[in-house]
Image (cartoon, rainbow over all chains, first blue to last red; front, side, top):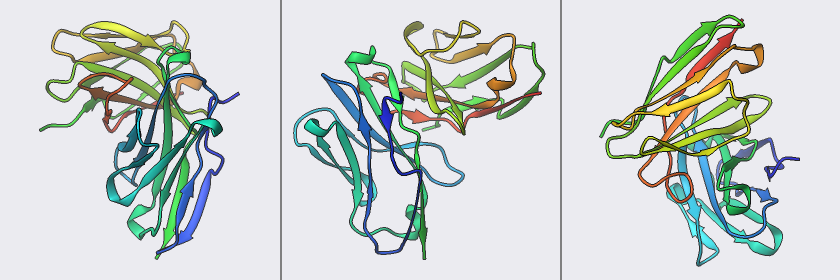
Length: 114
Length: 114
């Protein structure tokens, strides 16, 4: 069973719409959480990360994510998307329970129509 | 500051051959990690090296190996290639490592096994 799940494989939406991408993981204990983005023709880059503290973290380009420990979730959100947000988004988890390996979700391809 | 450089960018091999991929990290980064990306399996962690020592390893067979040199440059080797090894191999560098650090990815080496 996949240890990091991104339930939506493809998302299509129009500019100015709100975006929420789900990420669930199956590890208990201490986790570090990441969202990475890959724009067309570019390499993966970090959007945001959570280690501890405020469960609502803000990243670059207006993205934010909320860590809900009880739900083992780390969902990514953006209130109003732009065409330039078209990309593939990956959730990643580093869990002590998994030997500190970094596990990626399967990715979600987001297409924003102008 | 130069980014992560991976060579070669593209290569074609036949079954049974071996391949060596190279990664030059961002200057000052001591951690180099490797990932395999395929359409079916997504992004999978191969291993991480930190200051010439393998610090972590994913669930890949022993045909996949790596090393890191004193200048932090890293190589990974795949022996006895199989068709299923066709993938994009990504390298990432980090000043502190995969547990807490932001990863800086290269553009990848695309391996095709015929």
